[in-house]
Amino acid sequence: MPCDRTTEEVTLEHKSNVARLDDTDIHDWYRFVFAYSDRVITELADEFSITQNDLILDPFNGTGTTTVTAKKLGIDSIGTDVSPASVLAGQCKTDWNVDVDVFRERADELLATVKPVFDEISSEGNQILDAFGEDAVQRDVDLSKYDLSEPEKTPKDWLPEEVMHKMLVLRHEVEQLPDDDATELIRLAMIAILPEDVANIGFGPEPYKVSGPDDRDVHAIFSNKLDKIERDLRRVQDTVDDGEFVPADTEVLLADARTLGKTLRDESELFNEYGGIDYVITSPPYPAEHDYTRAQRLELVWMGILEDNQDLQKIKKQNLRSNTKNIYVDDDDGERTNIRENDRIDAIVSEMEQILKEEDITHGFGQYYPRVVEEYFGGMQRHFEELFELMNEGGKGAYVVADQASYWQVEIATGEILGELAQERVGFEVEGIKHWRSLHATTGKGEQLPEEILVFRKPESGG
Image (cartoon, rainbow, N blue to C red; front, top):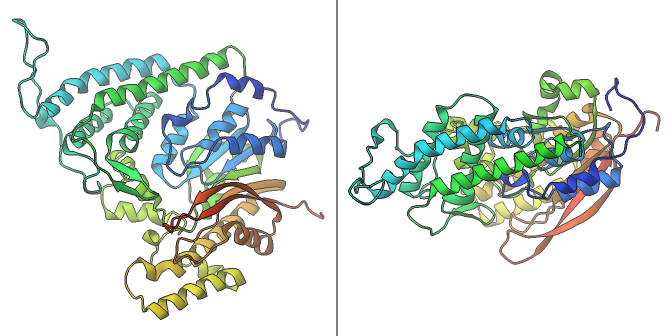
């Protein structure tokens, strides 16, 4: 808790009034395919007796489940992530002071601007009339001012040509808007509809092309998303204005979880006000073939963040090494932490190295499986070391993690191994690992693997 606030225990007196807000309010403005339920946060807030004098951190904030829920509960929070798309989502979802009338007016002007252009694209050059009859007027739409060439890093065939052209027009027009919080909401709506509604992709768990229509009503889809954001914002602002509850303060920052301390000390007003973190509730990446940058590829492209391979590599290198698509020659998290001195990690890596030798695997992503395990757990140890210095004594961490068998069906007890690293190497005290739910394994054999919550605390001096 902050040094200049009362130390008297405060219950979550506003919690019962949060029911006025639907479960989907704000959360589904944009959801990441790997996001977890807000129920995790509400249940842990009860279990840990978190109060409105505490500060929560989510160092793998994703699209903001933890920070949005904490704000609803009246608990100050900080979220960090390495993905600019996730940071945008987290910031927009926790900024409840946007002038909704300005947002609505700007959204309507944008929709009116792109409507005739979208119609022209869908018409494929055929004559379009504004109305039927003698007074019908042919629209005069000039497409030459738009660059409709496919962005370099757009995955092949994810966007049909007509849809891609409409989204490029939309991006162009959004870029002309004033740079403020109302436009940021519009930008979020634009990137949110890409994977959710307009692209021909599915997730299983990696994104892949699916059959779909050659064209979509992007105007209606975008309009519906804007309407949803407006309704939610008005509802939450009315609830606050009625005095039903006081939303907490929230910060969402771009940061690598392995070097978290510098970002919080340099950029976080909340961290410096409180002087330390009281609770961490998060779900880090798992050692599996989930390429998080590919899952958000379209969003990053349309934000203008990802234009070439150099941009992609920069983003990937800030991620924990949890998959073979972001392993690099100079990675050294495993080496610098001597991670194979942990018997369980060494046994897993040794088993994988034996498979490589027996199967004579020298090409393909399989050759990197042992390296992923080393770099993943080495990176997580570095993260725990950072966290230990940032947390207040007695502070607790709750990490939603899942066991894995993605690599040649070699079992990886993620939660148990992370618990060993946190306790034996860093100094936390593991309080337990509780079952949360079961997940389908990615081995294609229909196995169920447990998703668990690893709970640990930072011991008090002399305790």
